[in-house]
Every structure is written in structure tokens, then in C-alpha cells.
Length: 411
Image 1 (cartoon, rainbow, N blue to C red):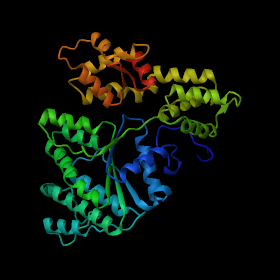
Image 2: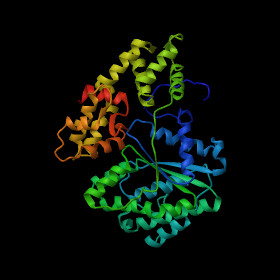
Image 3: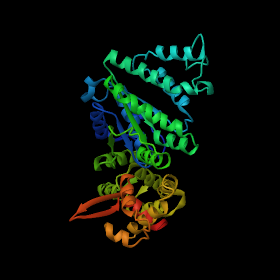
């Protein structure tokens, strides 16, 4: 790693060039992207967006020598809040037209199609000449989107390049469409990406689907409610985001200290190890703990201020917004299963160590016999870890800090 630099602890945005850690993750993701597209799924505040922004920055500035021959470029799109496919198309064209780290993509075929559909003499989406997001164009959005992706992939093939389209919060956008009863549009977008993605990948286009809810949650809901049978991600690799390594956590904390914190140099190693352990190596919670020490303990890092700050994270409502999602997302995305999920998590939170599956089931009311299915879903959705020993499935919270919060506030 580089030499530590002053960095103010924040749970908000950071300049791309100052994003710390995740270099090994970026290398592993790019190795996968050499062959196929991927999904990145984790609950909120785990560092997904910062990882993807750093990947975009490093690719576009040629900062990863290992991949110099792959000619990777990346463009990040946040899809949350986009209300229909027309808005998605306009966002993609606008961002790619503004993209200065590469050659200009030729959208002439897309514009020709829009002119043909609308009868316009001139059609450019980034100006006011034509808006794709017009109700009268809704029946043509799929055709326009196909043509847009074709224009991009043809440019890639001609220039022997690979372009990564990072579609952040794609699952959230699809969920919003589902809740607004725009079922056909959600399914249509999934089918478009499924139908053309393999062909586009052969020409150099790659996708990263990223979300704080898994695309699997959306697909399962569509299957249960609408008999959807598509498999739009079955050939994509799922990449799981792990906590920071000890070295990454240490470097992050060294940077925070340089922004004005006081620490006993003789106790420094032990104190930083304590913070990393309490926060499970999760950068968001490390930042949060430093913010509390800054605000409540006059920037003095001591054993006492660390422990009291950790207790505030777990007990003080003003520091618990990130934790509240753990219960809220179950009620939102698993409305029929949420209460049983909450009971199961409460049983596990109240155990000292790990707990066998049979012991969990014995402590809950499982009238529909769905506990095993729900336990599997909680593992997939990153709440729980699971291991198999002597023919028995054994569960624990994936992160101790989540278990402590759940035990104190929910169980």
C-alpha cells in the first residue's frame, strides 16, 4: 500500500482517487470479467459503491498494469430512481457520450432508428431534439435499447476494447417497478439483458449488476407472483464482498489518525486491532466509530473511548440508521416470511456461539415447515454464515457486530 495520508472519517462520499482498499477485489473481479459478466450483492453499507467507483477510476486511468492488454474501460451508472426503460436508455447514452476516457461511441444506428420511429429530421438524445422517454415511444423502447447495445458492442469490436457497464442498484430499480405494478417493464428489461448479453459479451461488452438486495430476491418474487420463468443471470458469476483485510483496516485507520486524532504510540497496535475486531473489518463501521470518537471523545483514541463508542453504535438510536435496515429489508422484500425470519435471527442472536439447525427449529413455531428454506435464504442474503459438520448444518450471524445489535435491539 502507499504511504498513509490524512483522511477525515466519513460515511459519505470520498473522492475516487482517495478510496482505500479493495485492490485485490478489483483484480479478482477483472479476472472474472475477462470471461463473463458478474453480479455483486451485499446489504447496504458494505462498500459496494466505493469498490465499483474505484474499479471505474483505476480502469479508466490505466492503473492496473496486470490488465493493460485487456483494454478495460468502465462506466458507472446509478439506476435507483429511474422510473422506466426510457429513462435508463437516456442515462446510458448521456453518460457514454460524456465519457472522455475513451474514444467516442458511434450511436448513429440508434439515432437513425429514433428518427425513423419519430419522424424527426434530427435525433440526438443528449440535446432537446428528441427525448427517448416519451409515452409514444414506449412500445419502441425495447427495439431502441437493443440498437443502443448493438452500437456500443460494435464500437468495442472494431477497437478491440472491453467496456464494463456497472449497473448499480439495478435490483432496487426493478423492485420499484414491481411495486408500482409495472411488471411487464421489469420482466422486459430482464429479458432484454438475458437475450442479448451473451452476443454482446463476445464483442467485448461486460456487465456488473450490483445491488443492496440480491437480483435473486427480485427473480424469486416474480416467479412466485407472476410465474416468471426466465433465468437472466444463470451464466453470471456472483462476487461476494468480504470485510477489509487486517492490512486494509490498519491503513484506513492510519489515514484517519492523520486527520487530527490522538493515540498513545505504545498502545497503537493493540488499539487499532481492537477497533478492527469490534467492527469486524467493515470499513463503514470503522468510519462510524472514528466519527463517534471525534464527536464524543475529543479525538482521543483510548481503550475506554473505543469501548464506549462501540456501545453507542449498538445502543444510541442516532448511530443506528445503518443497522435498522437489517429488520426493515426483511419486512420490505420478504413480507410473507419476515416474521419467521425475525424469530429465527432472534434465536441465533441469543446463543453464545453457533447453533445447529435442529436446535433453531425446535425454538420456533414453523407451522408451514419452511424454516430450512428461510435459513438458506438468510445465508444467501448475507445475514448468516453456515458450515457443515458431521452431517449437521450449523449457523451463526455472518458478522458479530450485527449479532450484538440484533440481540440488544430486536431479540
